[in-house]
Image (tube, rainbow, N blue to C red; front, side, top):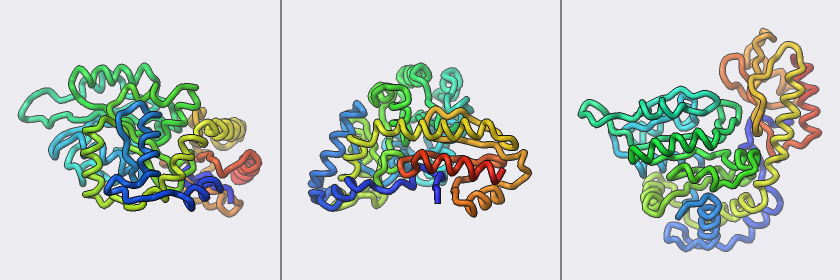
Length: 339
């Protein structure tokens, strides 16, 4: 089966499995797991932040950033199709007690003026704006890269208003590789950032939340409250070190595979390409096939390809480490036959 549902389906490499097996561990709740400490120091350095925290998932990392920065009754500014608003079970409201101030974006980018206008003035009728959230790369825009200019403009507005900025960087390293930049080039325009180790970087579990020491200390306490204080967490962190040191540059291979898939789909009659992929996500419109998403996905599955529904008439394909170039060619043939 050629699994193009998500880059979350990657399996750990043999080197990761060996590192997991041989990991030196301690009790991370006491701060005594040397492997986790090494991972957090490495991540903080790469992301240009004072401190970092190993968390169980990208969602947990995002929610800890909200919890560490906000109080119940506050408001946070989010893009209308951002992961933190669209896919996290209303956790910002359920856990932190904050409400979203939704701003419509274009390819994941909010207009700086719209963000400025979304910040509440001091009025007893209004909630306090306590956080601005960006997402890079932007999942629902097909893995699009939010530009430096856009991020800087929003960050400058936030600094003027004394409001912190958080980046959901679950796939930030895809942007890093595609733009030939360093992670710190992006994270200079935020106060905190979350990155996933378990997507294109191949680890089985885990994400990183990075920021200043005070914020990370608050997040550490919230992680404990949410049951995320793991003990011998180095078993998981060992693969995260390999993710950051050996799996970043190879993301370019996933981008090449996504572009090959997109180019082939663009030439197929009966379906149309929604995005020209900048990274590893391809979105396809299947309305002209007159098949429902469920029917289309089921036919793909019967022939050996897995994908996911991405809205009415839209299907998403995501390339990753466990799908090679031959798999992509087979997938192209199967998609063509289904169409």
